[in-house]
Image (cartoon, rainbow, N blue to C red):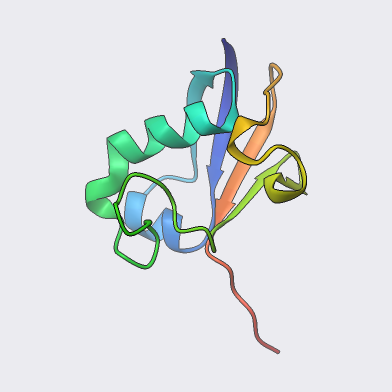
Length: 93
């Protein structure tokens, strides 16, 4: 297992009251699962999937600046010192 920083952005910071949390895991899914186990009671329905076991698919998850959707999604392997970011999608002008 590797140590990874999960960096929280926008609504996640407001709900969890932290900017970053360190976890150990082998895949993006390992890290997100740990985060949800610890904090899902603080997250609302717009952030969680219908069964409340995963993040809403609209949430943006970045690994070292790259969207995991274009990698292997939750099965993306992690390396020591990787930086994960989760964000609520925001748009505007």
